[in-house]
Length: 237
Picture 1 (tube, rainbow, N blue to C red):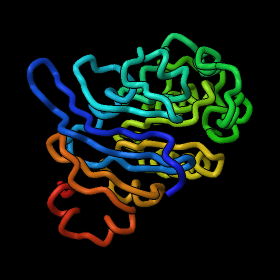
Picture 2 (tube, rainbow, N blue to C red):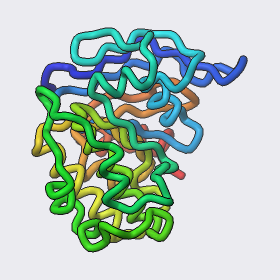
Picture 3 (tube, rainbow, N blue to C red):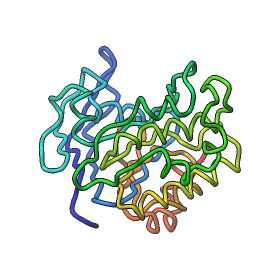
């Protein structure tokens, strides 16, 4: 694995008095795609929210690009170079595609790919056909693409993608896979929350499998593909 860009050690997290993460450890290398896998309720989204500082009750060490970020506010974590695409997308439905992209625009960042609307239209040809369409008049898959594109306008070094294949048409899932592979070629690092094993296998270098907030497997995607017992116990529906 390349040098770690993100390192998470001993991450515990709570919703109220209920503890939902228990000592989670993971790393994402520079230019690497890591799949965070597990069933619904395993703790994948909570892990991403904790990394982004969106969960107040958490402990552990989070290091990004050599600096501790676990005590920072979410906007400062974003400014450090982490982009976050939540599962519920959260685009601005009363703004056009072009305006949504403009909202996400930030200056170029050292060590990160630099994105413009024109480059993103090449990456997401569907969006190129509808720059003036309101977000609220787009399909779920189109909104998902726009959410990713808007995040990339911030020129992050690492993107957290929460369930990008969930609830979208198969053709969009295929386009999302192509997009992640293209981002990796650009040198971008991705932490991908995913239940779809085939999708994760197609795009990821390594996998971390969670069950009830605990890390049960960490290794290469090839090792996970070969370990039928782990897949049956923690990933089978």
